[in-house]
Length: 238
Image (cartoon, rainbow, N blue to C red; front, side, top):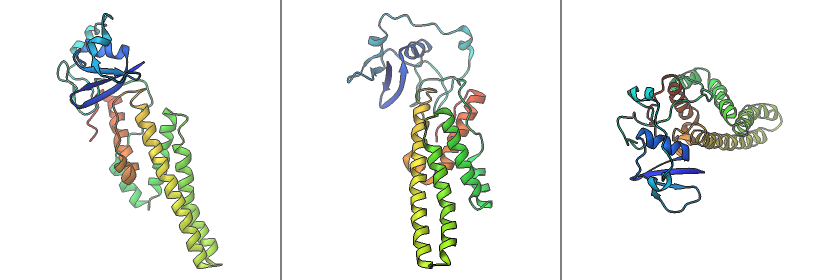
C-alpha cells in the first residue's frame, strides 16, 4: 500500500510504509505530518499509521552526510521538506542522456532542425528504456516520418496539381504535428509516473512547457537527473 504525505500546502509521495518508517527515523517526516493511503479519504497524523511499528535506526555512516538530495533544495535539518519530496538517494536505474539543452537548440539551428528531430528520438528511446510499454517513441518516429513525408508528397504531386500538392502536404503536416504532441505528452506522463514511483524524486512537469518547448524542457530535467545520479545532489526543478 502506498501513502501520501501532506505538510502545510504541499503534498508528497507516494511512499511505502517502509519509506515512511525510514524517513521518520531520518527526521525528514514528522510524526505530526498528515498522511493518507490510496484507500483513505481523510488525512491522519503519521503517528497513527506508524503506531507501534518499530522505526529502523539509520546507519551511523549516514549521520555524517552534510547534505541530502531533494527536489528543489538540500536537506538542512530534521523535518525539513522545503516544498519537495523527502531525501532520496540515487538508485541503480538508467541514467538519462546528459547533454545541455542549450546545445541541443544551438546544434538544431545549425542543422536546420535535423539534430532536434534526432535528439527527440534519443529522449523517447530513453523513456522506452525505463518504461518498455511507453508509446512515446513510436508516436515520435511516426510524426517525424510524417514531417519528411509531407515534403516528399508535395514534391511528387506538385508536377501534377500544385493546389492538390499543397493541400495534401498540409494535411500530412497537421497529422504529424498532432501525433508529435501526443507523443510528447505520453513521454511527460511516463516520466512523471516513473520518477514518482520507481525512483521517487517528486518530478512535476509543466504541460505548457511540454507543449511549447518539449525537447529542451525534457533535456533540462534529464540533465538534472543525470547529475543527481553522479553527485547525489538533485538541483531545483526550475
